[in-house]
Amino acid sequence: MPRKPLVYVIYYSTFGHLAALGDSLVEGLKANDQVEVKVFQVPEILTEEELRQLQAAPKRSYIPVIKPEQLEEPDGIMMGLPGALAGKMAGIFLSTASQNGGQETTALTFLPVLVHHGIMFVPLGPAIEELKDIDVIHGGSYYGCGTITAGDGSRMPSELENVIARKHGAYFASVVYKHFRNTPKPIVNILPNASVKNEEKPEDHIDDNNNTSQALRESMSPSPRLMRLKSAKQSTATLIMKLKRIFNASKTR
Picture 1 (spheres, rainbow, N blue to C red):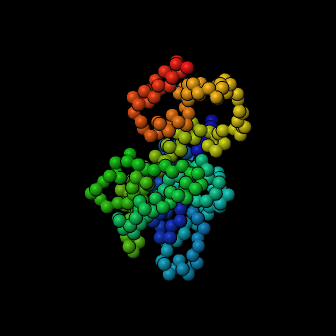
Picture 2 (cartoon, rainbow, N blue to C red):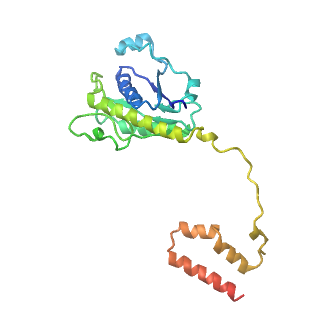
Picture 3 (cartoon, helix red, strand yellow):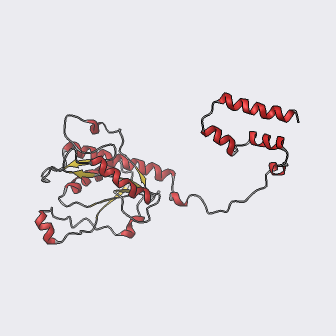
């Protein structure tokens, strides 16, 4: 039996909001039993005194701290970090203090990190109906699930936000599963390293000094001249007339 694709959920949560949202995300990832899921947190950069003054939530000591070399292991990552990540898949979940606190902007500014590491971003998109709810204030967007914490951090993920997170997790799991099933090898290693041979073509023997042969060759192959015509979006009729003139010229010589 082939192994299941492996998905890492990695987060940093000072006040517990992303940790709580991550729980729902993991539920969604595991819902269809398509992927194996492991949860990690990133190393703490604040001192114990700084965390105390911030009134930070207690750290979940049972959640292991991710190491850079471990990032090569999974087939998909929810929230990406630097490493050998080309060909991996990533999704984003986040929190902001207010409804207009920049959830989409936060996601957008994270995308360049994924791009520069060759990571494939899997957006949430419009598939989840709960995301379109306008009766209840909630976080999240087409970029990924999210939560609103309130200015003082007192608001934890709502039931609606948790529903969206679970569905986000399930959707991401299905995308990784389908991709991994159809692409068993890492994308960057699919094509073998092979030198391209310069094979001799029959048209290479055409006399370049013969204007008629040159014109015929250009008309029958995707030459740079014709490619420029196409890219300039010239009409089909104009192109046909040009070809007719070339062929007529060849008949008179």
